[in-house]
Image 1 (cartoon, rainbow, N blue to C red):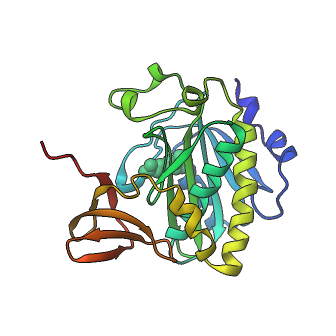
Image 2: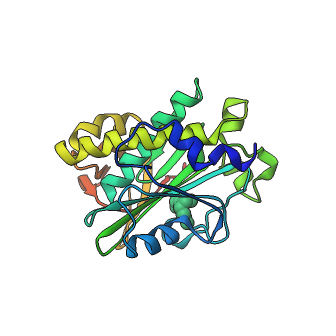
Length: 260
Ligand code: BTN
């Protein structure tokens, strides 16, 4: 598929939103769509504007990691929001919107969320969210592997990543998926503004990767291991550790290795 699948006029024609995605800026190549979004937010661009890149040269993930992409297979975009505050809930809302949208565009696929920001299919990563805030602007960036073939992923990503095409067994339309995600995200964002995160807790919990399993959480100040029991009403992670149930606001989760 060519870049025409992501043409703004085409995506707009499929979009039924009032705030999110009314302005879509398509860049053939960006450093990072999050950086582009922040630059324009600083210059006063409207809330809900979306920056889409066919490819990125400096795509970034959480904790300074690089984000791998291919021009014909990736969906890379960032949404500008007028929001200053805690970014965790926004990350979850976009993750839920993406998971729901993927499942409605590719029947038979089931998407899990590795708390707080990764999308998984069949135990392999298919997407990630980078939520950042600067001053009064928040930017939510999503990278999704859509149409890559397995031999296009380099090194360890061959085993660790999966594209929707591999999972669905067919090529998917990136423009349709983008429009779907923006539409669902707008609905979720407005519900969240009115009612808070509590209404999303159970759907988020039902999608949690490794729920009930022994996990290790790398927090800024310590490393904790425990059974992943779920989330609290604010979307924070609940782990059953040696000290009882503890709640965590941030961290990097992995599966605890079985002892030999
Ligand atoms: C992660 O898995 O750590 C998050 C990855 C986020 C990647 C997306 S791609 C679009 C946007 N621009 C970036 O530079 N990063 C995000």
